[in-house]
Image 1 (spheres, helix red, strand yellow):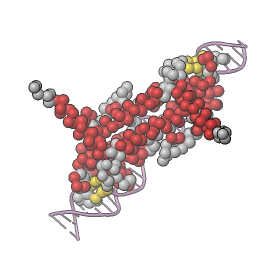
Image 2 (spheres, rainbow over the protein chains, first blue to last red):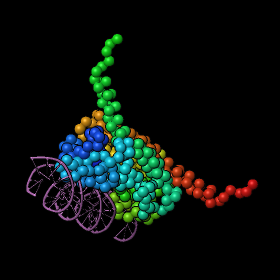
Image 3 (tube, chains in turn purple, green, blue, red):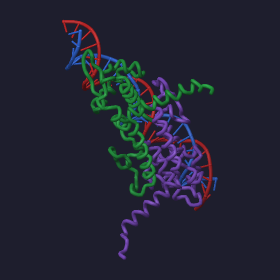
Length: 156
Length: 156
DNA sequence: TATAATTCCTATCGAATTAGTAGGATTTTT
DNA sequence: AAAAATCCTACTAATTCGATAGGAATTATA
């Protein structure tokens, strides 16, 4: 499961993708209240996102955070790696965080590894496609579908 | 990432799928040595697998563990759920372990949830297909491929 | 130029989880 | 009766998670 940190990070990023028109900074406390995230915890999270180059900030009285990249360039895979580490379920199939399984007898012929290698490839593919833009778009789609269902079609 | 417990469990199960001819029990200490798993830890793991109905055991001098189901019937998804809980990355897209995200504002229109729902579906599908039989078969396939590469084809 | 409001940053903390270990009870074969 | 295996409960050290505290630095504005 995702850590709360990662979940909060994604929610904050999506919020910024929606809110910040023309890149105007949004205050931490505003994001925290809107997204039900503990203020101080969010502070630490946004800081890390800035260090990772996804966000930028302005200090002082009119300060706040805003996206450093476009919503198309920020994806869930990168956010997850930043806070939770590898997406792979086994260290021996991770790409950036590769590590041999200590108990492993023969990595090359390991059927377990083969399975988890496939799982990782599929998952990474899907999570890279999950950009902030894609998430916002999906949400819009869901809203439309629901309002369509609530207003039943007129009789002929 | 998988816990060591889950990894050990899978390795032990695959070992049993390979070793136990005609369902003869295999001793814990033998599995532990062969698969590089701490003896006492493995003891606890096998016990859980028995309680879950995947293994059975015989006590006493000629005792040990053996598969309770066929290698086709035991899959990685079930083992992971047993030790690590849900396969879903968000509680709100888990099936058996469903839980609302506390911070969530509207589950129905959540684009994040939509993405992770897809990821879960794909992952579960792959992990259910990953039976002990499939894993052993993949391993055999890999062995053959390697030996083919080492003996280069004869000249015409 | 003071001050109010914001981010920046380090340190700390309690609770939960992980990865085991200890030790003896129970069961079965010889 | 002894040997050898599983069964079962309890414990523990180390790490991670989810946060909080408190103040330094920065910036707009009265």
